[in-house]
Image 1 (cartoon, rainbow, N blue to C red):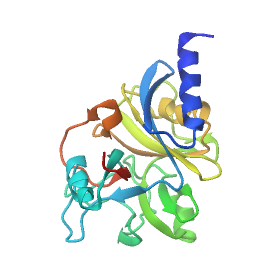
Image 2 (cartoon, helix red, strand yellow):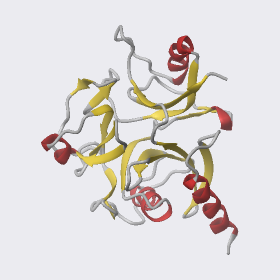
Image 3 (tube, one colour):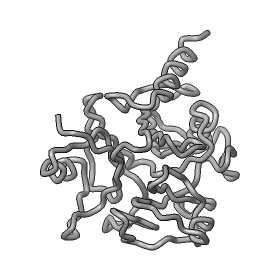
Image 4 (cartoon, rainbow, N blue to C red):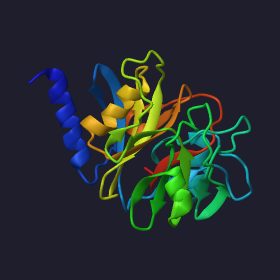
Length: 246
């Protein structure tokens, strides 16, 4: 067994653990480095965009400041979907059961509209990644939801437009969901990767049947257990695990 395979198996064993103190861990796949953050269903996972007054959070620090009044903090967080220049979500966004922006089902030339795209949903029964047109036809009751695209894995198959060996490489992040909806695994690449490589990580290494791309180039992670707090311009949608404040 090679050292790379041993590290990957250790990472997969980590992902099989239903609850851990530090949700994020680094691993390697196909010559690239990734950071994986797993959340079991039942944990306090939320999507954030703006506060009750409509003020954009924009970053991890603003969310932590807001959570402090609850005696809580972020266990980890990352950007969670594409946004317009004003930081409004491009597609569907549901926060605390309230639809902030509607679903978009039309295709387009950008990554978001590379159909099939999809929606990451947190409901009262589990996590799901659902193709956007299927979601629009029969919307589930999501407490939180964010739309993005393209889908990376669709029912166990890679997106049909992915090109093996493509030279379109970026730092990328996204989420995959287990078949039973009881685990969500958030991933950010530490090296520039193409869509095919990123999708194969979810399908072949993590064995997740459905996965959704969040974004590239602007991808950022907050993981205090790894002493990591990526800086950058204000963001739109953010997903974060809420834990008791240390």
